[in-house]
Image (cartoon, rainbow, N blue to C red; front, side):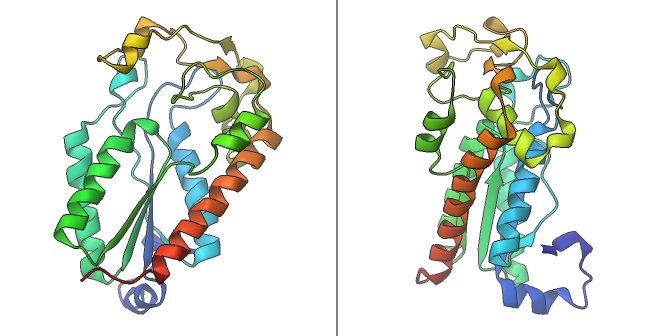
Length: 246
């Protein structure tokens, strides 16, 4: 696996030309209940990026460990950055990667709250450097397999957090950071208004857990992550062979 920060300036140029693809793991530091660490999203993004890189010959960049966690910013341990700051940083990284000779920039996201910033950064890069290929990936194509392995109904149509699903991800990808003896069941009632107006999560949860973490298993995590990885690799390989924009 090509780890960018371990390279030296004398050798890296040729390796960039050969690989062409840079993967940036992006996570967050935020509350994940009593059984998962604050850096859960970072660990997930890092481990996913490593697996993808091994199969695609891509470089893995140092993890971007801070994200937009407005909804959970008032929970102990959470560190929030604005969408504006995140967009600017991602655009700057993308421009620099292109100048260094990379042809593709893949952002592997471990935190749903980053989605808006990643999309906007990708749009900005597309506008400024149309020949530069940019992907932003967040567990693509896993809805069907998630529905199949899930034992409890999701607390929300889009969110999953420190629950049966995300805890299963961690048990598969970073089991050493999980303390299942502290896993809890907390399935909050999330008001419909939370989808249409700013709603800090402390208004409907004290734990930051959105489901039954006690039902999590490594096997569930492996089934879902395996599908996500296959889809990520297919997206990267298909974009590699796609014609460049003029």
